[in-house]
Image 1 (tube, one colour):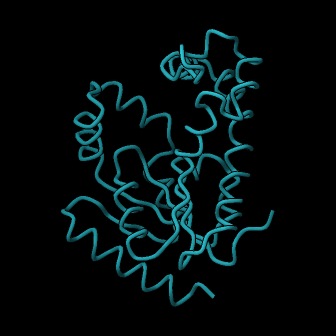
Image 2: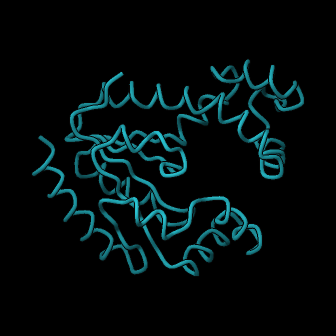
Image 3: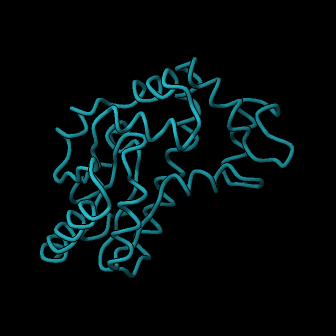
Length: 202
């Protein structure tokens, strides 16, 4: 499946503000394809990835409703790199195909694929025209995730350590939005890039 003529890959570390930025672009007419939402639908009760997950990991990795037991799976893949690779082999191709199908059917001004692990995946870069990274200072990132998810700092730092470094993400980006200040500052940066994307999308 070919990529759309013009598409943005939106990424950023946990707590960077990707969802807020995506919402701002959507308000300006972009179509957002959120791979996290697709992943959740894949692992919901009767989700298309569930049979393969249960064959690979066992029935104990389904909760009482038949969805993937996220807490159990998170505990496993966080400590077992092999299990993580097996889960990714099941999910990533399905997520990618569903995302690209959604992008091909989109009717917005342009498509933004919101992919938290865009840099880590190694495959998304070839499927988008430009990479947009949302960046913030690490102490801001940690504080946001601790407040939002009620997690201890050690766990937040462990999640961050499992992602590519801030420096690697910035090096891979064509465009950067800095999310250290307030909403007004964020909106101004989104507006500037939205204008740019409208100019170069063809």
